[in-house]
Amino acid sequence: MCVSTPVSADFINESKANLDTRNFYMNRDFRQSGAAQSKAEEWAQGFILRFESGYTDGPIGVGVDATGLLGVKLDSSPDRVGTGILKSNREAPRRAQDEYGEAGFTAKLRASKSTLKLGTLQPVLPMLMRNDTRLLPQTFRGAWLSSNEVKDLTLDLGRIDRVNQRDSSDNEEMTVFNGGRRNIVLGSVKASDEFLFGGASYKWTPQLSTSYYYGGLDGIYKQHLVNLVHQLPLGEGQSFKSDLRFARSTDDGGSNVDNDAFGALFTYRLGANGFTAGYQQMSGDTGFAYVAGADNALINLVQINDFGNQDEHSWQLRYDFDFAALGVPGLTFMTRYINGDNVDRGPGLSEGKTWERNTDLAYVFQEGPLKNLGLRLRNASTRSNIGSDLDENRVIVSYSVPIW
Image (cartoon, rainbow, N blue to C red; front, side):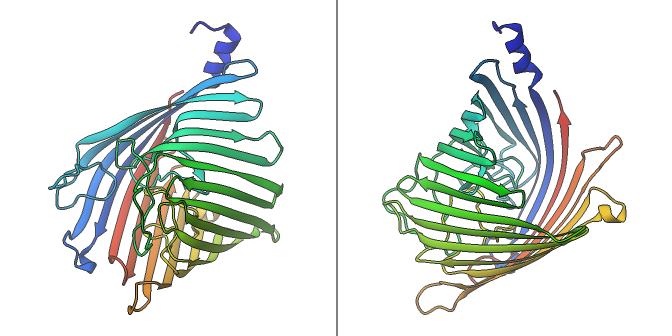
């Protein structure tokens, strides 16, 4: 604390701290597929404490961020373990631990409009998206430089060496996701301690933006991603949004990764209504490659599937409604249906097919003593001849408390 008064004031006065709580119940039913375990069902309470400091004064400002994560078991058993909301032991019989957590710290340096972060990171970038769909978020460890020196241009460059999965408290090496019918074959290198990324996003007009990003998991795969987003106003209360994405993935000496992924998503908004249609196509010798446990940039990444298997073609229809138009602000509804086919199942086998249906109902209290309390119900069903048939329900109660 041996700093001058102006420095101390900037560092402290611009700081903020927030506590997010999540009460998470999840039930995944395997009975439709005849699986050995009939269902996964668990209930837990999560706490996410985030602190972000300001910066010291001077040409290079110095700051620090901290994250504290804690998950507490409320209900689980060996015959219902495996939802991903609790950490469980790796030896049989699997049991969920009573609690788990981690503390992460990030040093940050700011010069002009550029920021360098070192330590715990939670990137949301096309080639690397932290997964935050369970009790606690996935985190990464590394260095990330982000620059906005040129107006409307964002540049990103970084290196990641470890990942902490959403149901873990261990920093581990990374590998590529290979579920479903990805058909990715790894050589002697099964995991990597280096993910390099870089890219740029530019906003040409308030309605048009484009981006290019590169991401590579050393010794396993490398990937180039291009994205174009255009928002077309159509008059009062109406708009049409186009979102086009293309990714080229190849091996990096230690796998057979070879994939082209194309996606197009179109959304028409009319008042409180949103109508969306999308198409996604995989081609090449494997399915889409990305870091295991993370989210990805595919347009058909939904509650259970991402429809990124080898040669898979899929389409999506979606409807959204905002009940603020009916005098109930904070209440929203979403439903969608995704259908995929043409999956390569191997010589002599028919094409692989999958469909998934999602429904999401959410409400956030807008005022009164329960302001910022959020309630969310999520339901999903999927049927497939290349994976398990699943019925899933999630109930999430969240609350955010500003501390500083």
